[in-house]
Length: 163
Ligand SMILES: Nc1nc2c(ncn2[C@@H]2O[C@H](COP(=O)(O)OP(=O)(O)OP(=O)(O)O)[C@@H](O)[C@H]2O)c(=O)[nH]1
Ligand SMILES: [Mg+2]
Image (tube, rainbow, N blue to C red; front, side, top):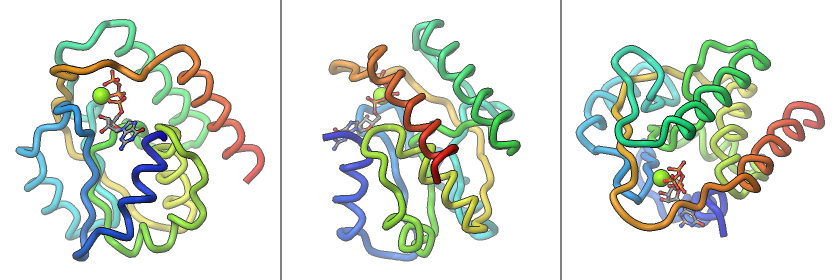
């Protein structure tokens, strides 16, 4: 039913003062978490970033990388923020971020990543990025398609223009 739907289902089941989100297709390596959690002492959201410092992507098709880079560039320029990786699913949130923004996030697919971050920034929460290596999925089928990409653009415009 989509990534956003899954996050909303999972949120009431979480405990503790920090919430970690990560993709379940092994694209995210937990070895980056200690540095991210350390950073979360200072800010409200820490993004595991493929596009800052030593951040990188391994094994994915150049076309997918290019789309990702372009989407992030477009979001960065149109929102006027310095965030390099808006679509990364590896994040550490302070619990109060989710408590405050979750009721206002409507996107149910991977557009959730954009809307949650956008609304968190709008609520004054602070964000920092920590470089990570993103690995192409080891197995399973991708849900990515032109339809998904167009759906993301639609959601982006809707969030930006209507809310
Ligand atoms: N529970 C649940 N999780 C989902 C769903 N869709 C996506 N996810 C999770 O979100 C992660 C990110 O989505 P992906 O489809 O892997 O997105 P991506 O990494 O950009 O693209 P590919 O790995 O190339 O397909 C997945 O690894 C899953 O963990 C869903 O419908 N339900
Ligand atoms: Mg994936």
